[in-house]
Image 1 (tube, rainbow, N blue to C red):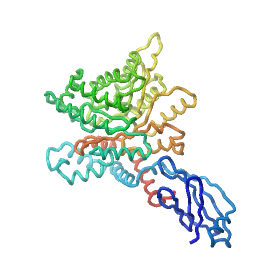
Image 2 (tube, rainbow, N blue to C red; image 1 turned 120 degrees about the horizontal axis):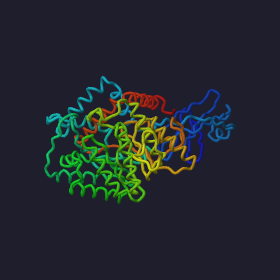
Image 3 (cartoon, rainbow, N blue to C red; image 1 turned 120 degrees about the vertical axis):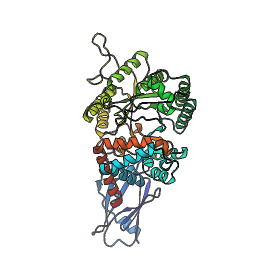
Image 4 (cartoon, one colour; image 1 turned 90 degrees about the vertical axis):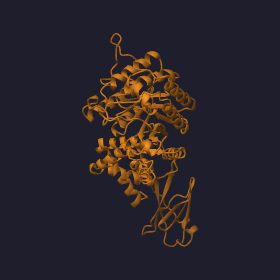
Length: 508
């Protein structure tokens, strides 16, 4: 069969009837058809830093009817070249096919109330069951099913090797890094009395410390670790409920984790938890920021939940303290994830109110300007106080919120204004359409998020631990999907579209 070799930049192409092979990295072949008039169309591929080819242009080559037998004659018969722009691959093309299929199936369940409701009941039963038959650590079949489905979708792994493999896969996809959470925690039933053992709790604190140190060891410089104080056991939770200063045991354990993280270049994000212990967490986290955020860079971040009515006032108070005392405030801004387990009156009445508060807080922090939502706690002679130095994580799955943040950042960049240190984060297994879109936007590719943005500051948040330890985390992810069915359906449609494209038209 006659063939034509074409050398272009770093690639060598072999064109034969109906097939184009790329001789680089063993990539899959791409279809190519001859036209009736003897026209050959072949594609020039641009390979990104991730090793993923993207179609950058096509060329049409015409050949005469009397020069088809020899490759050399065929090469010399080319007499015209035209360039035609072709679309960039969609953002979700960055996902591996097995991940894409699993994401689609789980999002299909999450988008259907008929399927999601019994799934939530099953997860809740497994998370709280006292029966050894229903405990995943004792039932191998249940363990296998959970680990290969929802656990694989949302969690990094049970062992260090599994976690490191997951982190590597996320970074190869294009994320700058991960936010890794040790999944062990205590969750209370809504309205139930809190009865805790007031024993010393030294063993629980030591186990928590070792788990957190192991979490930090699993990370690379520039990654983040997420911490939950409730994972340190009942004695620590009791201190938080009573809004007491940390005991010597938990204080020393936390100091060891923070010191190690600072020395290894890891940021620590202290997660928000249930309202019963959140005020205590806020105070402990602020005290840690005073100690560790003194070099102009935040090592410690507190979490602020936009769905809570008290959040704007609390954040304004912390901003004022940081400004007065001269440390960098680390802010992780989220909408919130404990509506099903906390009293409803603590939150805004509608999602629209939560969205407005979230976006206004984000805007105020990014611009470092007070507004009608984030107002200063006090003013001096009618002058609003200056903002402190702050570092920020925008942890949201809401496309509109991200686009607003990106637009402000781009405006600041055009004007040459100083910008706050900022990154974006989404939960692993959720909002992949948004995460990959941010990656594409960072490369200057086309998409609904236009223009170059903070590609190198896009992270995925995930948990690690045994399947049993992660069940509460998985249950919370399922509940989040129930509370945002509209967004889940949009994500499922995007995943379905990419799956059809991948299976039916892989060269598009």
